[in-house]
Image (cartoon, rainbow, N blue to C red):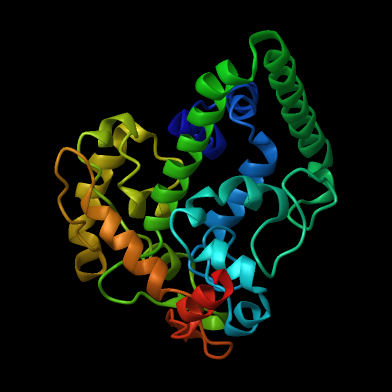
Length: 289
């Protein structure tokens, strides 16, 4: 479901934008995602990938914003598995330091001409939420828990796991850019390919994430081919992903290490790298006690 929604949102499902919209609303609404709200914010992510302030998805916080967060927010954002539940909250209120919502047409995510699109998607989301409430009364809470609620949160966690690791966790710290140092190409080359083992085909090969960012409308069935063609051109700027076993268990350690070390970037400088807050987990422990 995740990759089918991704195809419509990127415009690579069909050359017909109306068909993309219809299928996109059906699929996104079924997993409680406002289609146009996500499509537009994800377009912003692709147009500004690797930019500290202008990127939209899993971008770093500046040190100033990080220090302004209250302790519960830091706990949620940098503790596993809680951080892997972030997606619905991001849709509702975006990331720290940004204002607006994927559901509200007046959010600064959107242009005035996109107002009707956002309202349409929010209406579809509301209809789906209402349907789930009705089904809860018809089928009972336990049946809904088994058939929708648990699968929904599994989908959310997997989505956050995959998207986070496409932009974090390389053994070498990767740069984030500001100002004149940023370019579309430089930003795209900070993304990472990942090997998901047997899940690669289920994911329509979205682990080939570098070429996806540089050319987001390449259909999924050409991503592996396009990546192989691009490797000689990219040379040292392409980072070969670690090979996976049947299941990508090797990525769990990479995720845990990144969550522990990648907290914020400097407020100054046009080329910056993630830094760690050495006091974060001691602070969380004290708060928990």
